[in-house]
Length: 301
Image (cartoon, rainbow, N blue to C red; front, side, top):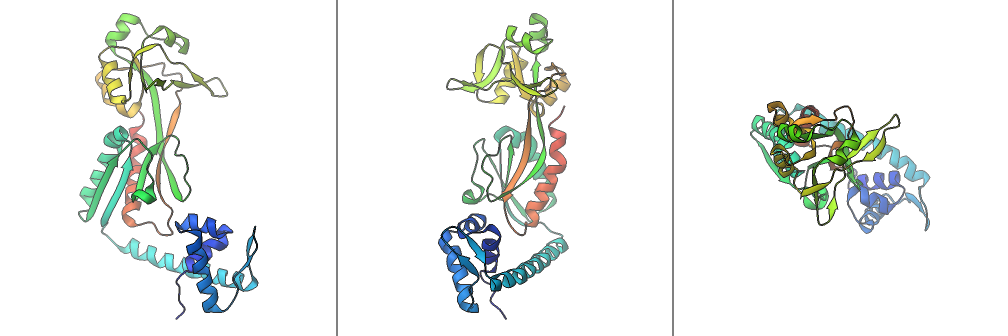
């Protein structure tokens, strides 16, 4: 029986066009990839790649071997998927990273329900607003809003959209009136997200071309926590620009009033990220599917 060790490395090198690129894909060093290829070549007594200082291409033998290896790996993956689909139990440890408040309000209830439905699943949910390295930090899955930065080696799936809106308390509006258009915000008091001299601007899409417009009211209250901003807005200290999932219950109870609802605010995309893998573990797939079904309903009023 042929030794299959290193076949996935060979296929990755052929598809990536280089040892370094294959290493990034498989989370191996360039040296480790080169050694794996050399072992295969020695065992088969053939040369698989034409190597130059700038290019890497398959030899005729390499092309033949590549085509057979791809089919073999596809069969292996299909067999693994068949075994997974036949299992009724989701088991093992699932480590997930999520933003602090979005994770608490939107992600945790969904994953806690998944864990309750599968007694052999161990859930570890870490809350952090800072990006994490899924590979280095050992996370199976991460949920992020907005820009995800460098996603090399990661798979992504769009979960929904985070809608941001202006709101104010009835007591504030009774005293200062309601803004009717964006320019009116400059005559109101804002409660903004910021710290260390930096303020997050309020962003809107205006006109037929959806041009990005920034309008931030004057402010004396600046917090680096959106829940504290919502509390201050509810207390009547000013207007706030907050995600709909955070203020939904306050809006429904009447303690906060949505404003300028006909002016679209910037929308942040919510995504799931997980390490690229030829076979996604069942527990991760269940978590992704559950979040994809639930999160879109959490991001609108």
